[in-house]
Image (cartoon, rainbow, N blue to C red; front, side, top):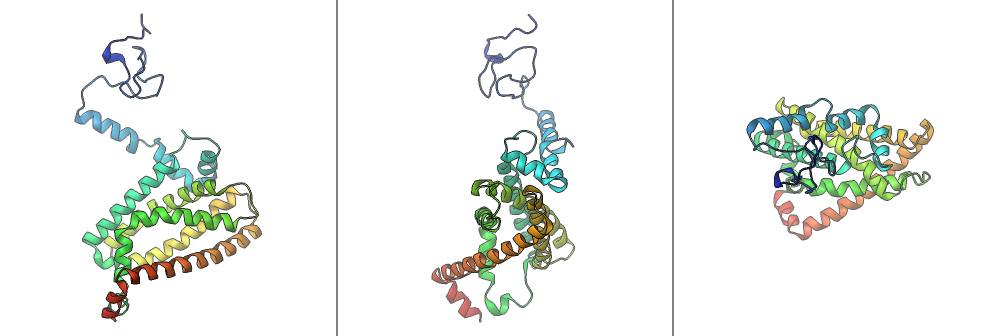
Length: 264
């Protein structure tokens, strides 16, 4: 029979072990593609192309729609749309990977782009910045809960999202910013740009993009948005002032104070 489900070892899904039909190329149970040939370079390239080079692939759709209509991606995911766009964890992982590669590339080939002229020589800040580079992934992960906490406080009068849902919102926003900035800052360094000067400009764009996303997500009027932005900035300043003090205390406790005194 054409649609017969065979029960030999070759006709069981290698992923979920469900019996496969000879009439279909994909497993009816888990959706995995039926693999019958041995692994070769052609097959690897075809799978790579399907995931990363296909113009209709999920990553590119997510990346594009986060520019044109971020509400569709973010609010859709929160409300159960999980197949149309890349989930927040996967998108964050891609952003983190690109950012890690960017830091490695700049430290290896363009270290001058990471310097702030006149700063290291007199203030000993090199220790702090090198620590940030060494633990960039951890810092990126920890910042998202902080941003979500600030957003929850800033939009206290809007009950649409709980803290966990704000984590999703800031996860998408931060990941999108990370992917874009990793690409732009790498090219800027190649052409002689400074990581921090250009990075500060991109941080301003990050703030504007965050406002743009929340305006759509919470259906805010312009006056409401401006009020919440001011509140967001104020809370952010206080939170990061607190984190800076705590970081300074930890660095000094770990011996950074001695390095700082020798550099002055």
